[in-house]
Image (cartoon, rainbow, N blue to C red; front, side):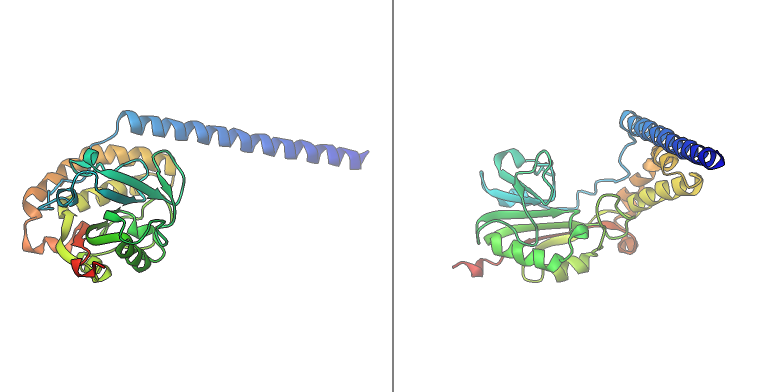
Length: 261
């Protein structure tokens, strides 16, 4: 009898634990859904002040119906600058999601040599295991005179989606793209914007009591409070010392026309 009672008590305890875990999981799902709902309904303005640093967008070098390969962009379809609608934009990604045209690896681009007019890689280099190999592939698929545009965070927090592996400064991008002819390089997120983004996340971290759900809510609240700081970049980003704190390093280059076969 005592053995059976112990078995019964043990079974009841196990069922109670499972029920408790399920209840906790449901609460977590409901709370996560609430956080997402609040963030989507009351999404704060961007903390980035657009410096309009590019003198000439990559699209201005391209003729109508030029073939543009956008790496890891999911459904953006090249909508970074005006004029994307007159181009043939192919979205390449390693994961099949809505908006992806070509399923493939940026380290082995599934296009023929000299078949692409422009390659865009915006905020994706940080996820690539071998960025230099990607640049070799980009050079292979680009036609002579084809356009390469790279953009990568430098002073920036860890990105939440995927394995965040690398950061590149302006000089780092130049070294990476040393086999191309540089058109322009610089940064498009100045010191004030960089600080505003960091500060909203740091304050949320400081006051969330180690709750990721609360962190998500607070980060949005703090960003609402802090985002006006970005407008200081209208002046500060022009300072000689602005290069000490920036993000959004970019490189615009061209495959040498001398490589025409």
